[in-house]
Image (cartoon, rainbow, N blue to C red; front, side, top):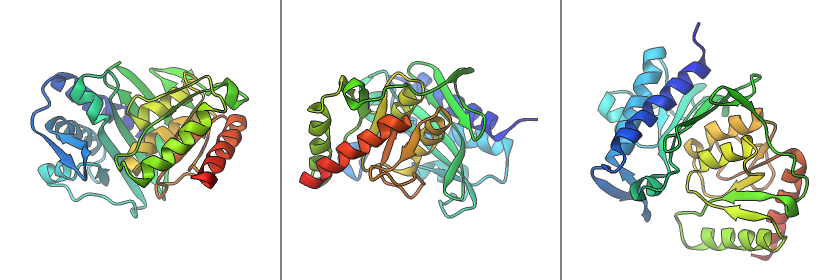
Length: 271
């Protein structure tokens, strides 16, 4: 009997296959909301493949996709975060990287019940890696169990983060936090352009912690469950429990997470 986790994996892989075929052939590109936030024909094509995979497993499924054109093309009424159960999909997380051929862009698929993800998959299409998790079943990378690192101090940590599309006050706040971490000091900070993949770096122990502001539910939902099942504490940047209403995220093992929240709070107090 196939499970919702199987559906999440299959859907993420279906979207990733589209992205691999479309690499270097993005089709029409347009900006949305800001001059640095893009959508391509590849986003839409990936989204169609993802939703078709979900609906083939459950024709009655409700689906919320970052790009509304996906549901329009399929003639499907889009789901909402108010639904008791909804699939939350980002068909291309890391569009700017995809446009430039930078090898980090992903498909993120999560099943959300009452505001919290219960199963999810993130497929880094550029590296052909599939991360997945479901409540009570742990987190896996291509079938192998993964867990967060044991880094106990910010000064021992490799962190990952991202930058907001809004280059005004939100960027000023992020730069203040970034500077605070750099002067902590940390071992280093990386930025690769996909929040979903950043979460998976933490879940697999490649990075020790991740924080970012100004995100949407589809950026974080699958990564949140993958991190949680790998042993991370998952909150917003204020330390409150993460839900699909959250607009930021902070993930790390519980000991490091406490220190990260303290650094963020100290930076925000001076920003």
